[in-house]
Length: 210
Ligand SMILES: Cc1cc2nc3c(=O)[nH]c(=O)nc-3n(C[C@H](O)[C@H](O)[C@H](O)COP(=O)(O)O)c2cc1C
Image (cartoon, protein in one colour):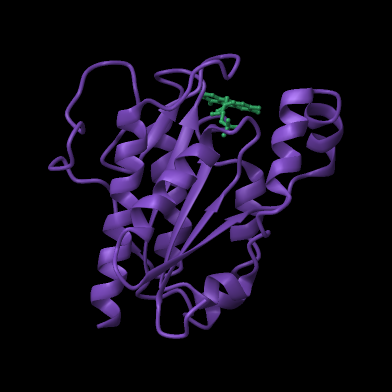
């Protein structure tokens, strides 16, 4: 990673892959900004989820294996980042505990003000249309605000933001609808809005660095 590059960290949790697809789109958007390098990171999985939801489910197990090459986010990754964007599937209208666990290890960063002034954003996936995308996104912003980050969303000038069909894309952050069995995929618009957030955070991080 080049010393002088602007570094954008994308941290996600996923079980069925939808949030990972959004994470990759966010990364793509950030990467397109000149002088920006990205760090894609996952968070630790719980043993109970490995035992009960991953092992024995071939599709989920394969996704789990594929993700082993993606590093787990460390506190030093957060320190190195000029901007950070966090993604989580919705769990009862809130972020998944696996991502919350990472936030809950950040007290040192918080006490030292190490995330202050860094731009950031959030994205999510729900099973159903009204399963809580906005509540998850807004509550995911709380730790970012406590850490002193500059929280960014997606403005309505981004193409596809004003819509009425059943898909994702909110001013609070990108989102997608996975379906009750995970049978749906992020739409092209969901992915474009995710790219827009990545680009936006990367552009602001670059301007702040300059
Ligand atoms: C414990 C639990 C709670 C969930 N709560 C919600 C919820 O409140 N609303 C919703 O629409 N989906 C809910 N879901 C479904 C997940 O959000 C869905 O599986 C996820 O968005 C898929 O994303 P992923 O492919 O990145 O794992 C829940 C799933 C679990 C396991």
